[in-house]
Length: 261
Ligand code: BGC
Image 1 (cartoon, helix red, strand yellow):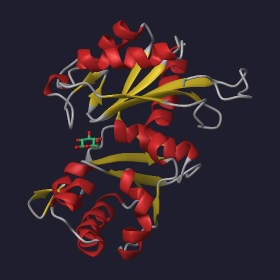
Image 2 (image 1 turned 60 degrees about the vertical axis):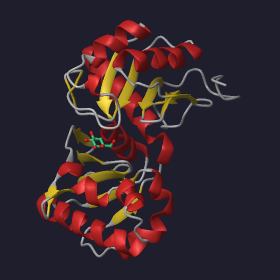
Image 3 (image 1 turned 90 degrees about the vertical axis):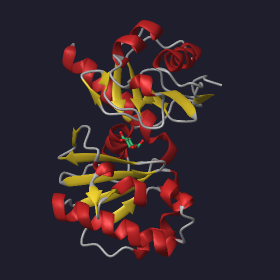
Image 4 (image 1 turned 135 degrees about the horizontal axis):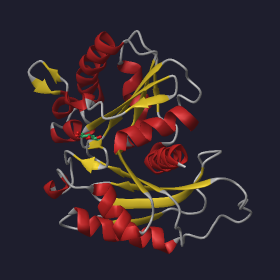
C-alpha cells in the first residue's frame, strides 16, 4: 500500500491530495499532468471526535506512509478563508474558527493548502473530468450528506460558493435535495428528482451556467435521476467520482505553492 504504481514515471510532476470526510480520510500522490493517482490511495477512519488535532494526526500518518514532504492539499467539508475553517459540516464543531492550515503544517511538516471539499472536487472535474477544458460557466454540485458546490468560469474556481444552502421555498436546499435527504425521507428516484428539479432550476435562474456537473457517491446512479430532470442547461455526471477531492486538492495546492515561489 502506498508504493508508486509499477512503471510510474518519476520525472512527472507530482502533488499530494488528502480528502477529509465524515467517515474516512483518504490520500495519495497525484500526477499533476494527468490527474491520475500515483499508486494506491490510503484510507484511514476519521477519528471520533473528529477534532482538528485528532484529524491532523491521521493526515500526518497518511502523508508519512508515502514518505512525502512536498506541498499537500487538504479538503475539509467546511468554508475555508485564508487557511481558517469557518464552518463545519459533518465534522467536529471545533473546526469552526480553527487555523487549519497552520495546524496541519505543524503536524505534517509540509506546506499545506486547505480547501473546501466541493471546490476541490469541482476543480478536478474542470481540469481532468466531466468539464475538462470548458471555458464557460460550470457549476459542479456534489450530492451527499449535504450539497457542496463549486463555481468555475474559464477554468478558474470561485471558492466557497455554498449554494447547497440556498433558501428555496423556505428550506435550506440541502435539507430537501441532498442524497441524505433522499435516504432519510425514503424517496423514490422520481420523488427525489422533483426536489432536484426545483433546486437545479433555481441555480439556473440565478447563475445561467453553461454546464452542470453532478458529483457525490450517488452520481454512480446518475442514469436513475438525471434523465428525469428538465433543464435548459446540460447536466452530466462527474467523471472522477471518489478521487476528485484528492486530485483537486493536490492541483490547488500545487498552484498555490507555484504562485508563491
Ligand atoms: C457544507 C459545504 C460542503 C458540503 C459538502 C455542506 O453542508 O456547507 O461546505 O462543501 O456540505 O460536504
